[in-house]
Image 1 (cartoon, one colour):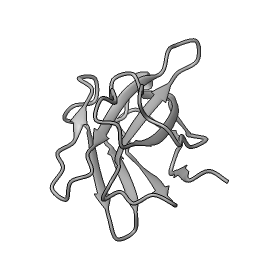
Image 2 (cartoon, one colour):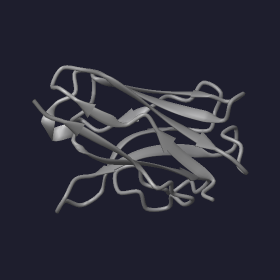
Image 3 (cartoon, helix red, strand yellow):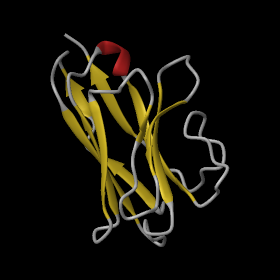
Image 4 (cartoon, helix red, strand yellow):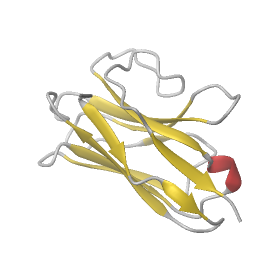
Length: 126
């Protein structure tokens, strides 16, 4: 049983929205940063968005999703959300979340993040 469980993926058409959830157990998001990453077939994993451990943490976004995706967290539920609007075919991939308490962790590559979930599939297609 993973300490990180993603949900909310699905098959949508271009322009539609999805909200992914990442429920974390055994670790408090008050002390850990959390990142969303994705991997498309035959492509390397890439960072999508991250949020720090602070109460008023500001999210980081890859340029490809800025203005369309929003990361948020509910410390009481120990859950992080990724609201994805105006989804495009290039957003297709398996989305993973992971946590980190490493100050040097990279949201772009996922280095320094541990306790990865099994992922949730997002497919954007006509």
